Amino acid sequence: MRERERESKKGFTLVELLVVIAIIAVLSAVGLVMFSSTQKSGRITKRIQDLKAIQTALELYYNQNGKYPSQPMTWACIINLSGVNNLAPNFMVVVPSDPLGDTQYCYQYLSSNNDFEYKVRTNANVFVNSEMSSDQFKQQKNLIDPAKDGTEDCLVQTTGIVRGWAVYSGSNICQAP
Image (cartoon, rainbow, N blue to C red; front, side, top):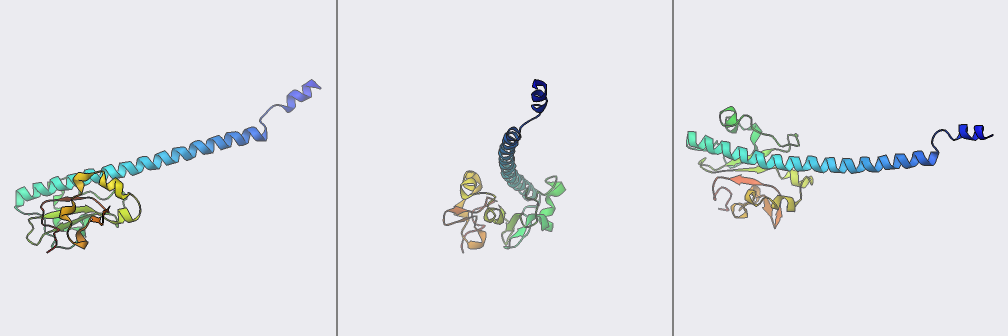
């Protein structure tokens, strides 16, 4: 009889299997949350680096040509602009695109009528789709200058809520007339 009891006790009980499955599920959930937050942090860092790289390339362009690439007072995705695309390969390896990879998320470029000032900003859709909160935008103060956001179509900040980041060449590019 003892031999029969030993044979029946080989293997796992249903409760033991359910406990192991529950532990694996909890560990997987924690891992996925950590992975997605790491990806989000990486995209935020890439946007900051991209804006600074575009700013550097635009300044190099200005030093060589005496003006910034032409884009008269309408926002356009930087990747679609012929003048701005001249930045690559002369002033930067490639013109960067937003890390989300979709064409609706792009870095936007605006030039003054005389091409002596510019503004490059992240697309406000990034904020709308909750990629980042207003507080996360505000953490990079050197990429926000409310004094240079004077007109509605030029804003990265509205009533204290920051919708994006921007780099500027001068103080008048987005001032209200």
